[in-house]
Image (cartoon, rainbow, N blue to C red; front, side, top):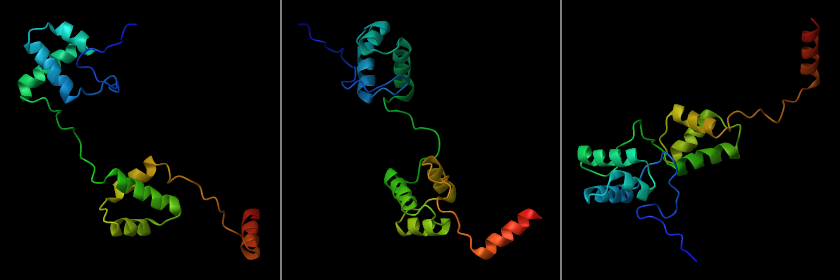
Length: 152
């Protein structure tokens, strides 16, 4: 029975999907193979990547003098995933919570978050668009006024 062995440098778990970054170990393996004189096309086959990936990895080392990933563009988030879960939990506990009350509760927990970031979290969780399940109750007087308003 033949063993299904993997090529050196490939990820053990196979979780790296298309268009995802190489790990630092994979980059160092690619660089060491290229510096050892192995053709770049052979290195690409051994590591199961495109040969352009081998070229760009080698150029990255020459240009940046490092195998680390470059910093990502954009503003980093000021809140953690735990903060996000806490905000969503407050909204689930009281779906009709007022903004002012929610901001006060969040501030008491030590979370400093802007209004727009808070709104973004609520919209992403799809909790802010529910229609009220409890309709306002009409008494006799208000029902009569609404009815007469509609007839005129």
